[in-house]
Amino acid sequence: MLTFEEKLHIIETFPELQRKDISLGRVNFHFEESVQDKKIVVQNLHPNGNGFVFAGHLPYKQRDKKGLVNIRDYSEAELRELLEQAIAYLSKEPAGIEKEEEAADCEGTWVGRNQQELTLVREDQLWNVYAGSNLEECFESPVEAERYLREEGFRKKR
Image 1 (cartoon, helix red, strand yellow):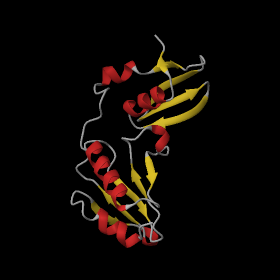
Image 2: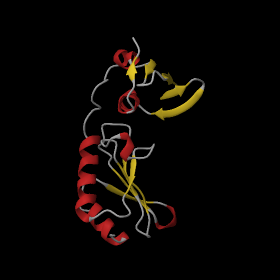
Image 3: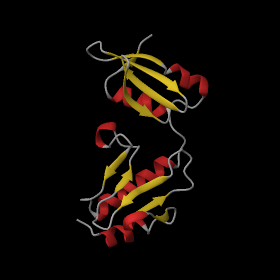
């Protein structure tokens, strides 16, 4: 496992990331040139070596609900690759749904393999997935919501 100092050194070799010291000795790194809403690439890097990197480019099952992966046990090569991929992902406009009219097309009922149904609804600034009246997931964009539904085996009901 890399130490906190080793992880800091690796992350600081990426000139496009700006360090932001936060509480309890933790550090965030921001990518201000991001063309997406997400700006924090490294989150809560802790002196104990724990921390998270945004990985919206990875399949939903490989990251947490916020799109982060834990880098506690990453090697130098793995960390560099993850950071490169995160920066590349945040440098591109989201693929797929790009216009408001097209985003509205993904709203509605989605059907799974066993005929279970989920509903995708835009509410305020979020895209929410419901199972009946229960909120299952929240997303900041229709692209993320649609990607999640497709990865989970759901298709838009026509």
